[in-house]
Image 1 (spheres, rainbow, N blue to C red):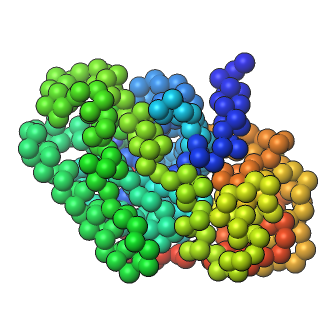
Image 2 (cartoon, rainbow, N blue to C red):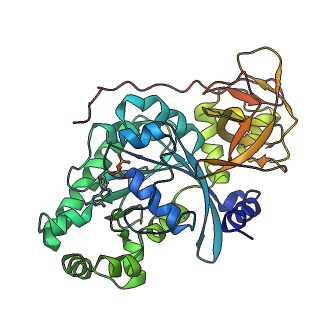
Length: 396
Ligand code: GDP
C-alpha cells in the first residue's frame, strides 16, 4: 500500500474519536516563517519527503502563490501524530500570511480550536501578529506561540544564553500583553496567555528544522547552552535529529490545544445565537456524529474537475454524499456530491463521510459562500464572520 493511502486510512480511523482530534491554524505576520514551519510539520508527519531546504512547499498550491512567494488561498491538510502512545488526527488549516487577506484568516479561525502563532525572534510581534491573535481570541480559539528564526539570534546576532533568553522573554511578554488586552472584557475566565512553564511556547528554527519547548528540553536533557553550541558549530543536522521541530510543535498541539469535545461547548455559544435548549444545540455541544448535520463553510475553492469545493467545520452529524442540505440565506437545498479531507492541497474523497469535530471538503453545495451555515434541518445560522480591518502593509 502506498504511503498516501496509509495516511488516509490512519486519518479515517481517528475521525470518529474526537478526543484524539486537533483542528488548528498556523498564523503569522508575513515572512515570519509560517510556510517553512508548515512544511516541517508535513515532513515530520511523513506527508512529504524530508529533502532539506529545497523541499517543495506543498501548502503553496497555486502557481501564482509560488511566483509571488506569499500564501494567498487557504490550503489545508490532515495528518497524524503519535503523542504519549496515542495517535492524533491533526487537521491543519493554512491561513494567508499577507495582511491584505485578513478576512480569510478570520474565516479559517471559525473552523479550528487552536492557533499556532508564529513570531520571528528578530523582528518580534508585528502588526499582523496582533491581528491574528485578535482573530483567534474573538473566535474562542486558543493560542500557542512558536518563536521562529532563533538560529539568527545565535549565528548572526551572536547572542549568548542570557541575551537570547531576554529576547525570547520579551517576545512572550509582548504577545501576552496583546492577549490580555483582548481578553479583559471577555465574560469567561479562561486564561488565554501563553507561557514557557505551561508548555504553550516553543522556539527554534523552521529553516534548520529544530525546535525546543520546556517539556522537550526536560525530555531530551538539552540546555540552551547545548543548542547554542551546536548551532554555532554549524551542526544543524545534529540539532534537528536531537530535537526535531515537528515533534516538538505537534506534541505541543496534542497536549495543549483543545479537542472538539472540549472546544465546541465553549465555542458554540460565542458563534451561534440559536436556542440553547434545542436538540441541535446539544448535538453541537456534544459533537454528536449521529445528530443533524451542521457544517459551517469557511472557504470556497475551485477545482477544475469537481467545481466549487466548500471547506469547513462539521459541528454536528456526519456529512455524506447524497444528503440534501439547507444553505443559510438561500431557498431550497443542495445535494452533496462528494465529501473528503485534504491531503496537502489535494482532496481525498471518503464515501463514509466526515463526522462532527472534523474539517471537511464538500462539493455540490452550489449556493454556499464562505460563512454559510449548511445543515440537514432549517436552523439559526452561525454568526457572520467579522472582517477585521487593519492597515495595509506592503511587502518591501
Ligand atoms: P511566511 O510568509 O510566514 O510563510 O514565511 P516563509 O516560511 O515563507 O519564510 C520567509 C523567509 O524566512 C524565507 O526566506 C525563509 O527561508 C526564511 N525563514 C523561515 N524560517 C526561518 C528560520 O527559522 N531561520 C531563518 N534564518 N530563516 C527562516
